[in-house]
Image: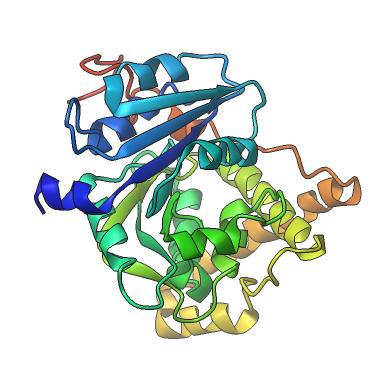
Length: 306
């Protein structure tokens, strides 16, 4: 894929970032074409940041436009970006994932297919450094039909202008990517096998449980919110039984999956009962320096290998 082909399709890339100085440079170094006249618009929305997130984004020069808002809110950051952006297709990328220019080209090219409103890349889970219970949990999670085929949980998706109109007025939700995925019917959204995004799961069991509490709370909020799309992403016993029937050796891993799920759902009831849909339960272990951090261009951080 040539740079010209890439730039002729991609028009706007939106990256909401709250205190992402440890990982933002890693992502931007893969998608930014410095000083290229035909480079796509990259909008980094630093929201409620108290670190060098905005400075790192600005260090990439005119290829990156930086917006800053005082409130730490992903949804408000996306709204600010949408007010500033004028072109489509539009790609939304979390600051803590990795995706390359060829992957983005495959995504936006797939939006040209008739009837396609939204697309997402295949998910690659970077498990290096994860404790064994985390790896066992994810071995089951990644096999769930809703996880395998849905647009959510990937940290990146792209929409056409028609697709954006479908999601523009969704209510403010914790599970924003799930709401986006559920907004599209069969045939309107697809995972593009030619594109890949690398995501970094929690490294420890405690961090995994905290993230799953957030997910469970977000699903509960979605199911209780007027104007949200109906949830069809719940895992069923039949889903789990089919996974183990195909691979009986996964039974011990299923036990870990069920235990983590039970703990997370039980804990999430505390937040739901209090109507607390604002506590984010952010995972810092996947952003730890020395594992996959990136700073200013050309900077090597302690413990980083290049």
